Image (cartoon, rainbow over the protein chains, first blue to last red):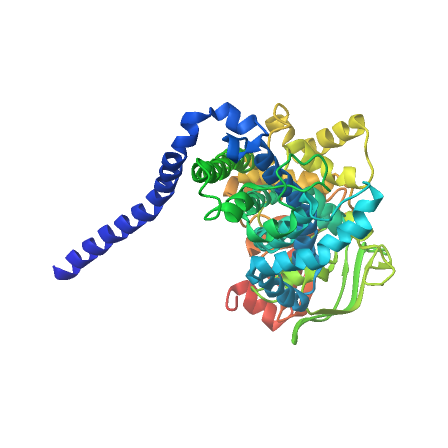
Length: 296
Length: 253
């Protein structure tokens, strides 16, 4: 009797804790909205989202440059990382001998354990001069190196282990016999990868990409160190950008004497929150549809 | 027995790690017949089958010595193109593994890889092979539906059609009916019997009754060695070796 009671209490307790942590998401959203209300009363959503005027002292808050900065950096990171990640994953799971595979996987995972600030320093010391002296001169007249490209490269390296480990996991669940079926028809390994494995792993690859993009949206310190933090909409990869997380991290606690500034930063956080939320919902929908198409 | 067997195995040894899976296998496989490889689980019969089209290549720590001659060409010769060897053989695995694409694309997969591009040619191949496996009437209205929507028995016939589409000489079946219901099983068995007019068929099975129903010859493998090879009735009803006798009577399995 007592044991059963204990069981009941524990299960209820777990429910409470689970609900508490889940509702935290909701609470954060509401909190951010509430905190950005002063700004929202003064300026409309339309102006806030589409205006490029960022003059806090005059009470002008246009978030368009920050939104674009975030999107540029994230897009560059994914464009660089995804092909590399896929090739790496296919090498690890399909080509590498078992012994090398056993070394490679922990090594890739090790990358994800490196603190972001170290990636930032690496970006400043290595990527910035590389872009400034060797890459940018071929395309534009002048670049300091601090650019959305630098941010993208650093981010790409940071999301690399995340994508690789998920995609490897997915690839290893594909039955050996399916591979053999293709090989037995006289296909090469590469043809098998391209036409069979890639298709079979598509939902997994999308899921990994979504996770990586969510991570990239929010990554702050490493990006902030290399992307120039200039309030302007980037027009090329060599232009500096100012992503939303960097805006919050750079200014929170410092510029709060300016009226509305705190509210503006809260709105920036809310924007980030909404972008990530929307992105996750959309990708989930895509994934569900894809899985249905494959499993039926 | 024929003069030029499609598959001739000479002193084949397969070792995985320190474990010898196949020991000194020598066997000539008669053309255009159905040959069953029988034996208890773990005796090496699937490994033997896989050694015919070098599907062992991907296994870790595998060592193969000896020769497997396919049309007189040693497939373990380092200069041999493995894709060219595999094209000669259609493989039917234990469970159907349709490729993640439509019914049509499954059958057209092999021909496309080997260079057939014209839609008219592909259409013809798809129709011919789906007819050959008795699937055409069941699927002709939904050729572009995902292959996974077919029943499991239909999927297995699709996999057979897919293998036939690359115009092999040999069909390898690795317990190809073990996941199927009795009706689908008998359809596949009948297909094997009718296909031997054109192809040499090697099947791995652990069902003696199936071996008896479909095959002309039987190879009995035990602990990595060939114990006996002979015409089906003779081997099953009048085995020469003591081990074979015990196996067919059900004393060892």
